Amino acid sequence: MTRLSLLAAPLALLALACSSEDVTPSVKPTPRAWDKLATPSDVALGPVRGFTQARGIIHSHSPYSHDACDGKGLDDSGVPRTDCVANLRRGMCDAAEDFVFLTDHAAHMADADFPSLLFIQPGDEPVLGADGAPIGNYVACGDGRRVLVTAGNENTFMSVGLERHLPGDPATRRATYEGETAATVDVMHEAGALVFIAHTESRTPEWLASMPYDGIEVYNVHAAIDPDIRRDFLGLEAYGGGASILPFTRQDEDGPQPDLAFLGFFEELPIYGQRWDALLATRHVTGIAGTDVHENSFPGMLRDGERGDSYRRLMRWFSNIALVDGPITPASVKTALAAGRSYVAFEILGTPSGFDFHAETNGSFVEMGGETTAGATIVAHAPKVHNLDPAVDAPTISMRLLRIDASGTTIAAEGDTIRLENAPPGAYRVEVRILPTHLRPHVGDTGESYIRERLWLLANPIRIS
Image 1 (cartoon, rainbow, N blue to C red):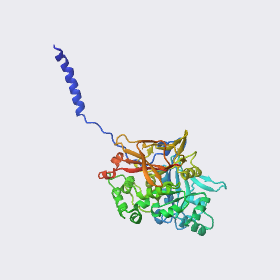
Image 2: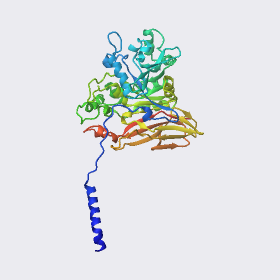
Image 3: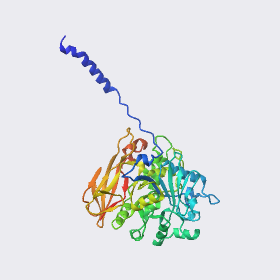
Image 4: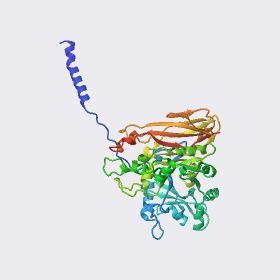
């Protein structure tokens, strides 16, 4: 037998095996089901140089706002409705918040005694001030976690983390809450609050430059949907926001996930960056995102069994993530936010894991919101989506470093990792964008239009002087 014939049989078997492999269809992994619950921040985010990354909501309304809970937050005796309170508490726990700064309209909150604004229930742990009175409340969640809740108001100014009512009887303090001058800010500061500007899009640059607040909203959900605000201040089609949500109300399983309704109307709104950068050119201003949830705009039940504007749903859309020094307390969170040691993450696009933005100078670190001198090195590392499903297409992530000075805003650097040495003077902030291809399995049979590049993260600036 020749050598060729001796090899024929093994080669034939090998060819058959290869042929068999070629025709066997590969099994594509099944994408995970949509998870309505958020992953706790200690799991998804982790510490940064000893700071705890705390996820939180700023600008949220409770039954004490006259227009919350479908305009009926209080019963006939003036007591918060139990169902609305339950929705609020369940929502903040299911969204895995670490803190929620309530900001109610003065119309009802000024009339309530201060501890009532904290919704303390059995099992909670009130946070007591120096005089022994409650200044906050750790709401107990069913999984053993807890959420820090504080009180505040939203009128012309938005007080965040009040430690007591403003002075006077209910009528007097209501008038002060509704004040519009710099003196109002001073009184709120004296009551332990930070002061932010809600609805920045509706304020003139001149007014914003004249007031002594701590920060501004650089995004607001209500503004993005409200027909009048869209038309008058954002230059958008008045009813486009509401119409964009309609596909997410489908009851069939082929429709998009209701939680992703945010993708219907979410777009970059240049006015926020313009207002913020104009202020950053001359002063420190912390940027935050306002959830502005009321449970008063879309009561219809979606196919996941929740109303369209539920506390949980809106609280999952985005977060203010603060780098907190030590335990999560009213003081530690407010200190981080006042300093600007925080960033905004639109977490419905994915929780950003591994984000880092700091400056290095003389062997020390300067965090977001900090200031250092010329010659420092600015460092930024783009995040990845936490616990990305291996069965989906990985998203494309891009990052850029912006420099703001008196002449305007320019792009200082771009890339997954940025290291800008000898940074010239200016305020530097980071923007991260994402092409969310990983969400394709959840946007339904007509949802490809939702898979486009989106703003994912906005970091507070580091100033080089």
